[in-house]
Image (cartoon, rainbow, N blue to C red; front, side, top):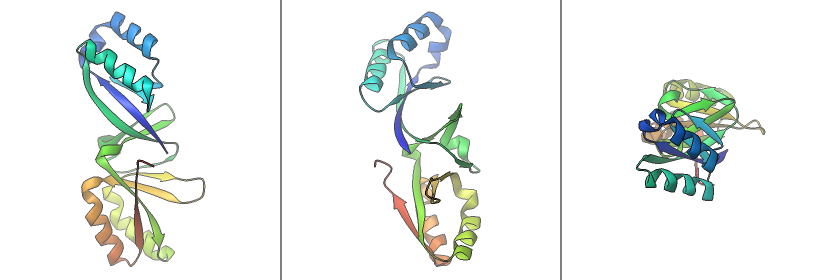
Length: 159
């Protein structure tokens, strides 16, 4: 997982192709999705937001989590999007968790119960999956885990 910044431009930017061309050439975004310009966190993102703000076209700044592989959940497109092979999730909308204990059958049963509430499941190289759900489902997830006698650990997405 990697934290990224999406600089959201006003929809007007699409009506100004010359401005868009200059913006992209000057700021060099990592990727673009509709009117979101994606940058690694840091100076490039700051410069891009300043550029759009000065032009009166800054619509928002979003923190994203970039994941490389996984499975989309029922409401994935409410909380994320795909550009090429990159998968981006809106960090501020989500909570992330992994299972820390419990037998395999109980974990699978709890996942079936949670399935409709998951936005995305990222598959790690170590075989450990990280599950993402709307932040307001954190208590629900905790309750389901408790009912199935499995432990979940909520993760700090800033690390």
